Structure formats: C-alpha cells, structure tokens
Amino acid sequence: MRRVPVLATAFLFLVGWTEAQVPAPPPVAPPVAITDADLKGVAAPKAEERAKGDPDGSLTGNVSDIAVADSKKGLTVADIVNQIGQNKIAINFVWTLITGYLVMFMQLGFALLETGLCRAKNANHTMMMNVGVYGIGMFAYWLIGFAIQEGGVGGVANLGGIPPLNSEFTMSVFGKPFGL
Image 1: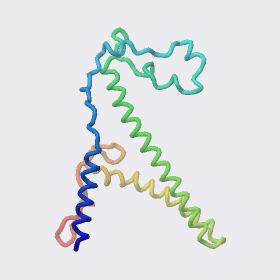
Image 2: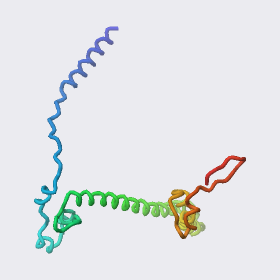
Image 3: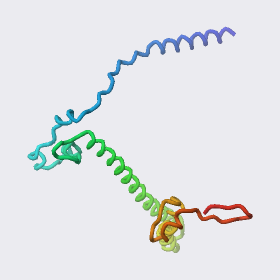
Image 4: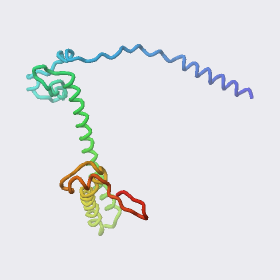
C-alpha cells in the first residue's frame, strides 16, 4: 500500500523536473516583406563563368534562370512568384509521369513473377498474356476510363462531343437508377 504514494510522488517529481528544464524559446523577429528594390542587389553568374561550363551545378537554378516579364523594369517579386507557381505545376506533372512509368515496370515485374511460378512450357504464354493485358487496359482506359474518372468535364470531339460527357450514364435495376 505504501508503494503507490511513493511511485506517484516520484512520477510527479520527474514530470515537474522535466517541465522545469525546458528553455524558453528565443524571441522571433516578424518576417520582413521582400520588395523589388531588394532584388536589384542579387547577382547573377557572369558570362565568363557560364562560358566555362557548369561541372558542379552551381551555376544552374539561380536568378538568371527566372523569366523576367519586363526587361526594362528587371526582376520583380511578381516574376519570382510566377516562377514558383510554374515550378509547382511542373513538379506535379513530372511526379505524375514518373509514377506512370513505374506502373509500366510494375506490370513487367508481375510478368516475371508469374513466369517464374509457372512451368517452362507455359512461360511464353504467361509473358505474352501479361504484356498484352497492359495494352488492353490502356485501350479500355482510352475508350471509357477517362469518362468514368472525370465524368462531365467537357466535350472531346473524338468521343462524340459535349453531350456524352456532360451526364452520367444510368441503368435502372429494379426501379433504382445506378450510375455507370
């Protein structure tokens, strides 16, 4: 019975000791907004340095790579913000492409796995089946998959124009509509 108060007292002491050891955070200065005048002092690599090449990558991705809207005004905050937005979209597109390519390699990995698990006489059929099913899947997505995924996004002339994509195809089963 005496252990509980002793353990509780020790626990409270340790909690209080650890809380007392936390230092106060240093004061943080408020952020200062960047102005166009701040960007005038940013130095770009000189033409002589760029002519020597860029073996270590230190001349790539600097202020000289940002597109300037008005060459008379020079670099502005709006130019930098615009470039950041474009980079965000570009990174999203690249990531989507990389993951799409990885899906293709995944299909080949399944082909190798299934070929290794079957008898030697069936290896050719198994490999061709796995490669062929990828092509069939891409064709099916081109045919109807996008319409199901993005239903009603707008007219694509190759798919019949606006009306087929502006509404969901429904099928009535026992009086209840089911969207396809």
